Image 1 (tube, chains in turn orange, blue):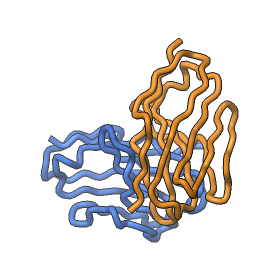
Image 2 (tube, rainbow over the protein chains, first blue to last red):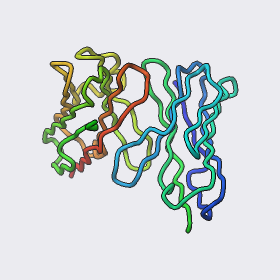
Image 3 (tube, helix red, strand yellow):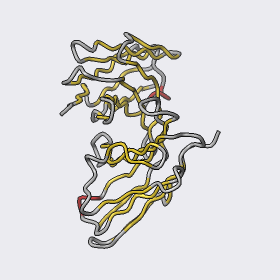
Length: 110
Length: 113
């Protein structure tokens, strides 16, 4: 069974800093990987989706990379802002199933 | 474009009672997902529909949970009877096609006393 781990569980940074969130998975046989953000009391918002054949995806200040062979993905956030404060979740798609990590809770301090 | 709608937003019931949640996906989205998110954990996929057919329900506790999507549009998830450990947020998501970007609703927060 696929297991997805996110480290760190919580992260606090000053505004303007660049940061990296990590996601690791145990089985490299994946279809794609998706990064989400979740604000308190709300549903998930999709940020980036990387297909298994891709190495990275970019959207604005966000860049996600995928190294399938080592079972790792990173989400890079440039020039962090207080509005980026949320929980960030990665989800691995194996074809029929989706496996989520427990998330990284990010706080950006003004 | 309207997002994924869910109701109710909150529900409090006593154990052994039954409860139902409703989801209306984004128009035209063929795939619909139901997730359970327990506090402090990531969402767990319970069931996935493609139109009105079940793609995967391997993690659905079928002795108490049931779900349907009769006309390939909206869906209901039912718990009968509820247990204390069913307290969680139930999230519905949809995607245009399978395995592509999922769009989530706001969720239904269930508390079982």
